[in-house]
Each structure stands twice: as C-alpha cells, then as structure tokens.
Length: 274
Length: 249
Image (cartoon, rainbow over all chains, first blue to last red; front, side):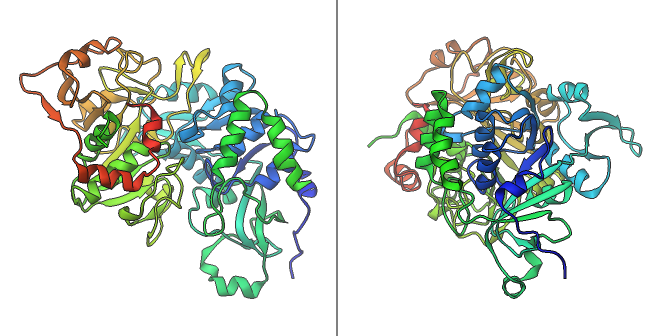
C-alpha cells in the first residue's frame, strides 16, 4: 500500500521554500484554498512568486500579508466590488513585480508544464502590447511556424514549484475529486513539482469508487500532501457545498482599501485555522 | 419604474445575439450576463450560453445576478461543466461567435486597454488586467464592447494595447461598442455612429470623447427605452439592481 500523505497545515507549509513559484486552485471568489493561505500568512515564508489565470480573494490576502515578490496573472479582480485592493496598491507602489498575462497564454503555459514540453503555441495574442513585455521577460516569443512560415506566439512552460488545490474530497493518498467548475486546476496539478491537496473531507477508497473514479482530478501519482480542511475555501465558494460569502468578501475589501487587510485576516482567517 | 441608460445598454448588447451562436461572457460582466438573459427571454434567441462560470447549457430564466459573473450558483440547471480551457480551445478553432469585453479605454482603431492608465512601467492606475482580451480579441468572430461614454474612455489612442483592434478591422471581424449614450461600429475608416440611446443626441455623443472622432452618417437609429416586459425580464434576473451600481446611469 502507498504511504498516507495526510498532514497538518503547518507540515504542508514546510513543503514550500522561500522564493518558490506557487499557484492556487479556483478563481476570484471560488474554491480558493483559504485554509492553506491562512497557514502561509501565519508562517515566516516569504518572497514567493504567484501565477494564476483570474485570481481574486486568495491572491489579495497573500499580497496584503506581504508574502509575494512577483505576481503573474491575466486579471486580478474583486469584480463588482472593484479592483483587487491590495494587489492594486502593491503593483502601483512597485512593492511587487506584476506581470500581466492573458487567459489563453496562462492555460497554454500550464499545458506545456503538464505535458513536460518546453513551450506551447497559442492563437491570438499577436498585436497586443503584452507581447513586448513577455518577450523581454522571456516568457513568450513570436516565432515562425516551421510548417507554414506564419508568425505564431509560443508560451514557455509554466511549472509551479507548488500547486495548492482545494477539492471536495480526497483519500489519504491524494486521489481527489472536484465537483463542478474545475478551471485549470487539473493542469496545475499536472504541471507543478509538488501538489498540496486540501480537502473538504477525507474519504476511503469505497467512497471514491461510489463517486465514479472517472472524475478524479488528482491521483496519488500527482499529490505530495493531503490536508483535512472542512470549509477550507471560506469565504470563497465550494460549489455544491456552500456559496461565496459576499458579505465577508465585501467586508475584507473595505478593510483592505483602508490599509487594514491584516486586521481582517487575523480576526477571521488566522483565528479560524489557529 | 422606467428604464435607465444601463437598461438600454443591456438591450443594445443583447441585440447582437443570433440563433445558434456560441456566446460567452467573462468575469465582472453583469451587463453582458443580463444581455444574454434579454436575448434568450425577450428576443427568444436560441443560442449556446457559456461563460467563465463553467456550467454549460443553463436555463436563462433561472439566472440571478450576483457580485461575481463567475459564480456557478448564478447560472443554474446546466447539464454539465464545460471548462474555460474548452471555451478557449473552441475559440482558437474559430467557433466562438460572440464575446463581450469591457474597456477602460478604447480608441479609433478599436484597440482596447484594460491593463494600465499611464505607462506599464510607471502606472498611474493599475487596472485589473485584460483577462482573455489579448488572446480572444483577434480570433472571436463578433465582439461587442461595453464602456462608459466618457472622454477618459473614448480616446484617440489607448495608453496600452491589451487587445489589438486594427487586426480585427483588417480581417473584417465585427467590432461594436455599446456605451451609455450610443452604439458605435468600428470599420476601416474609423468609428461610425449607428444608433443613439434614447435621451441623447448626436452632439452628446461626439462632444464627450477624449479625441476619438466618431463619424455621423445621414441615418442614425435610436435604441428606445425598454417596455414593461423587457424591464420585467431584466428585473427578474437582477431584482436588487446590481447593474445600476456599475455606474452607467
């Protein structure tokens, strides 16, 4: 039998090294791994880089807690509430190195990372001023398609050091199920060097069998750690289990706009998990 | 209760949806989401609804607007989840018919900026980012942009090209702008006024730009205020009026 990978939040945080590139599950206000983010905020980890397609709440908390030196995202938003408050401030004040990306390119980079190839061609993109910025950073290039000789953008593989993915259920080895929207989480799981699964519940093999193993988003081959984290996405939503807590998200947004994000994080997230 | 410019914008955005089209909306897109409800429920258009929220083939009559348009609890009764990855692959194959984009700035060539006001290196305002814009803008068949009719928004030249409009225009891809005053179409010769939002005149439209020159043809249509049934359908999907908090009037 394989070895159990169940561990505590603090043990899992120790899998992250200062300076690592991390990615998280979900999107804006949905299925963010907030228990793990609380643990990361509570730790002495620092100088992390962050990559995701369209992050929101989780990214803003990490930025407010000064854990990030670099952010790469296609959009960082609090949608109807406004701009991502701490990200906006940090980017404008140059406290983080912010690299804007575009959704299709982030997906292509993760796809290359997942497939173990150095880059992935992608349609669109050409003509955007983002091309020059990414060419300077050596993250995108425009090349000639060797078959047609036409210009095509290629995206360098994105291989996060650590992906932190919140799931509906996992067994103790990291065979895990996501219900409903999956975003790029399955690519992140396959592209990352280490995968930390936080799960609403830890289940046994029989439960997974009942659930239909065809829907496994992670397997024991991918996962490094498994954490039991009931309500671990709050205040972001866990589709089929609980909705986004917009009241709490708005309250955080107001605190963050006033430069008091850490007060909210300590009183709500840290207190919840420690 | 009478309709406001925001409601007429929703009608304008919804009028571009045709039967059998594959139509997609992204995050922070309350007006497009309601435009899709309007097209399905009032115009009775039979189209393929998909969005960044990922439920697929939902029931538009069950839609309720929430602060995030990526909320899967908003878009109910779908038969499955179809991921954003799939949506963008479909677009890359030339099969996405219509997508809606917002714009912090838009210029005469329909270039749109969602990245930064000022320079990228020294931002005056760091905007949320273009999301799918750079990727999808050159490849989706028909794009409808919504924006505030404001000198800071309708400019001669954007500060940063997030999505390249000249490529669209050169490839004869339909590119339209619905503001809270007018409907504008982008063609090779520049932007052309197609219709006025009821309550505004040509002078309102051409004088409130920040350098964007809008051509005025002899015939300009009017997009009329919503009737009771149109408004009822939109109110049902947005009973608390979140759409008005987007500040389009």
